[in-house]
Image (tube, rainbow, N blue to C red; front, side, top):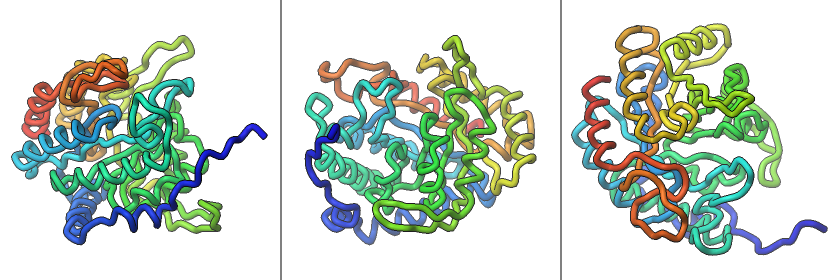
Length: 342
C-alpha cells in the first residue's frame, strides 16, 4: 500500500479533556461570540478587524503580538471588535512548504501531528488567558474542528477549500461565523454557492459517524482577490466590486448578507504595505454608500511584530516565515485609523 500509518492521534474529546477551557474563559468566549454575531446580524454597527500573522509558527511571538492587540482593543472597543488571526494550518498551492504548527510544531523539525494538535490548542487557550481575546483560524482540515470548536470565535474557509463539499458541510455545523473566501479563480458564484450550502442543514459522514447539522446563518463571503489565466492579480475590493457582491447577494436566498475584505493576498499582490491603502479605500466606500456600509462588516489584515518575511531558520523573533506581513508600528496606527474612520 502507498499509505504508511505513523501514529494514532488523540481524538478531539481526549485533547479537550487534557487541555480544558476554564469556566472564566468560556464566559469570555460566550460574550465575544455574541458581540461578533451581532455584527453579522445587523444588531451591532461595530466593525470587525481580523488581524495577525500569516501563520502562527511561534507561540511566544504570537502571544506577545496578541497581547499588544489587547491593549489597542481596550482603546477602540466602542468602535471595533479585534479578532486575532492565529492561523495554525497553512494551505500550500503546490503542496510544498511550511504547513503550519498543526503539522510541524517545530518549523525546522519533522511533521508530528500529535504534538501539533496539542500545540495548536495550547496556543489558542493561552491567547485567551493572556489577552481576553478569542481568535480566528483557518479550517484547512475539516476533521480538526473538534479540537478547537470550544475556543474559536471565527473560522475562515480558504480559497482552495471553498468548493469542497466536506468543508461546506462542516461549516454548516459551526456555531461561529464562517468566512467563505472567493476561489483563486475569482468566481463569485462559487463563493455564494458555498455560503448557501453552509447556511443549510446537511447529513454526512464525519469522523466515523453519520451526523446532521442545522445550518450556519453566519456564513458569509470574504473577498481576497483572484488571478487570471496568465497569473495576474485581479483585486476585488473596489467600490464596484462591493456593489456587485451586494447585487449578487440580493439574487440569492442567503441570510445576513455580509462581506469581509481580505486586504492582502491577490488584493494586494502580496505587497503587504498596500494593506493600509486598501483598508482605507474600503472604509471610504462604506462612507460613500449606505448599502456598502451595511454590507461590509470588516477587514482581514496580515500583520506581525516585524514587517516582511524571513526564511525558515533565520530565527528573527516575530517575523513571518510564510507570506510577508505588515509590522506592528504600522498595524497599530492603522487600527486607530480604522476606529476613527469606521
